[in-house]
Length: 380
Figure 1 (cartoon, helix red, strand yellow):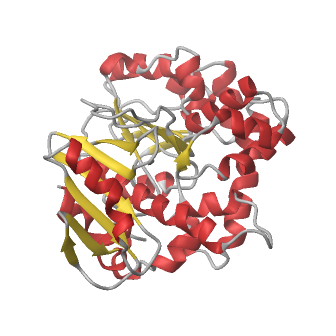
Figure 2: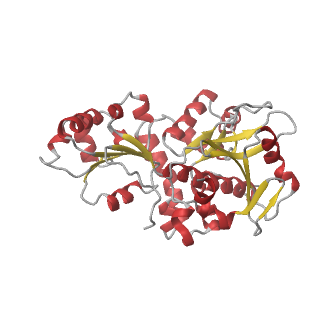
Figure 3: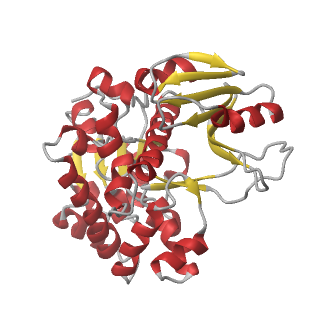
């Protein structure tokens, strides 16, 4: 068990969101050993509370003072009205976990009117794994606990993807055409760490554009993908409008991405490497309360200039480029230098697979293997 950086420091009820498999249940079991737990993935509990959410109160012993955990609360959004009542009437404390925000967001669920905070959990970070972190393994299998700790990470990831198709998409009725959604997942993987063209994905998977737009929303609601907006604050150039698409974990991306004799390894490893950096920064940004907003940056007219990731907040402005190569060429710095020209306060970073640390033209060039576990020292 790795010691997680996640530490909510909350004495009141809260929601804990995170994709399936990020370790929510394990963390709660370790940190709330005396909690009363209701798992809504259990058919018995699901059916009981679905038919009558008021049954929850009868299953909580009188005088219970410890925490109460409701796992996968999005399966029965109606139970949140009862949770709200119990918080008010019996002063009970709940942790409400979820791997999908779709039903809560679209169903107008009672989000407890400020009586519960919202926290997020992500795949394991290099910071959390410490000396056990292996960049090449993470690049191939990602950082979900089941892939990190399991004897067969490839089999775990294959099962993970099919489980989402079966349990989250099919059983919850998020789409009627599971085969089309499966084709979409593969087509979307070709957009990993790239500007997203919904029309191009639509053509690739032979699904109507409007349906593909809804599919992307499903991925975001299931917390397994994000769309990073372009940083446009006080823009001095004409910038692209398409967001950058990213599956939330490098291993999940590789499990979805089709591979064949025409696919160069660099075509897959490059996006996977950027994904690793993104997921590390995203998790630490949340856990350590940095409060950065995360963007990408890309011009829309030739010559196209881009920066992989941009962090913006009260702590500063950071532009980050990630390169798969073991040496840095002058053209690798063009996007960062252009960004600096437009945003003088920005700090510039380039991570690569070489071994030398050095400074060039205002850019801190750092070996990713040495630095990915110490991002907290650089961006705090």
